[in-house]
Structure formats: structure tokens, C-alpha cells
Image (tube, rainbow, N blue to C red; front, side, top):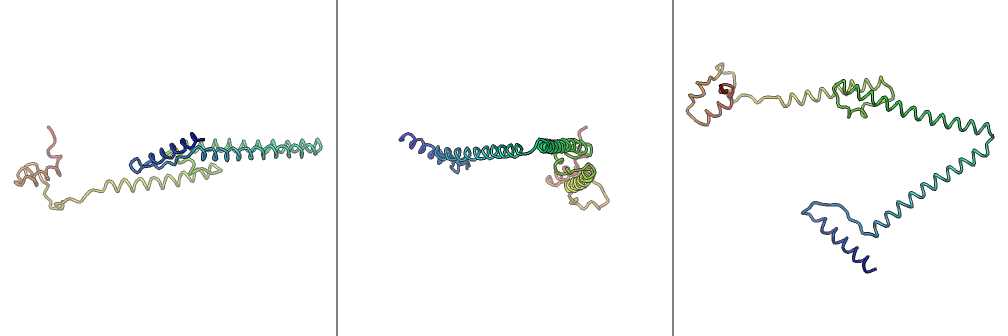
Length: 191
């Protein structure tokens, strides 16, 4: 028992050391008893779920046993039909998802948008892709235009006289000359 207490103290001390502000580690550490309690609770939950499943299966079997042979056959057929319909829905959704990704790629949109534009029919998906493409292109264009905006020229640019290499080299002030060279670097290309 003394070993368990020492182990818990060591775990607690380690938790205190790990959660120091220097490391920024905010993970919660658990003692052995806390872990045991959590594991026991999860195990009990799992056992209850499995017991409920077994009970439901048993009740269903008893119910089917009470039915006549024809009624039982009809029940089983209905069950198979519903399972088949569910599988068909899953396959159809999978096929629609594949087609949606292909349409997104051909439209120039990321395939990650597939879940956002998914619907139950192909026509609605097509409309969703069209609307998403329009909104996406507009957003990209706005961002590109925003980034391409140029700063207004400092000398006004409307003076009507473009500076030449000779004009720039004739500037006496070193800082102004260097600034003019930087603004008209194309005049000073390497030969």
C-alpha cells in the first residue's frame, strides 16, 4: 500500500513539474486510481451497451418465433429490403461524392469542397458547384486586386517628364539619388 501512495505522489509531482509555465504544457495528468475509475466506467458502459444489444436480439428472436412461417418470411424479406435500400443509398452517395470531386476538379476548385456542395441529386450538386465557383472566384479576384494595388508615385507622376538615367545620376544628394535609382531600377539593368 505504501508503494501505491508513493507512486501517486510521484505522478502528482511529475504533473506539477510538467505543467510549469516555462514549458507551456497544460496536459492533465491522472493518478492510477483516477485512470482505474475511468477505465471501470468505460467498461461498464460498454458492457451495458452489449447487454442491451443482446437483449434486443433475444426479444426480436422471440417475436419472430411467435409469428407464423409466412409472417416470419415476410418480416425477413422486409428486413432484407431495408438493408438493401440502405446499402444502395450508401453506394449512391459514394458515387455522387466521386462525381462531385471530379466536377470540382474540372471547375478548378479544390476537391475538399465536396462535402460542402453535396446534395441528394446531381442537379443540385451542379448548382451548388456553380454557386461555389462564382463566390470562390470573386473572393480570389478581390484578394488578388487588393494585393496588386500599387502605391501612388511620390513625385505625382503627372509631371509629364520621365526621369532618365542621366537625370538620376545628376542628383547631387546621395539619399535622393539612391531613392530615385530604387524607383527606376529598370533604367539600371545589367548589360
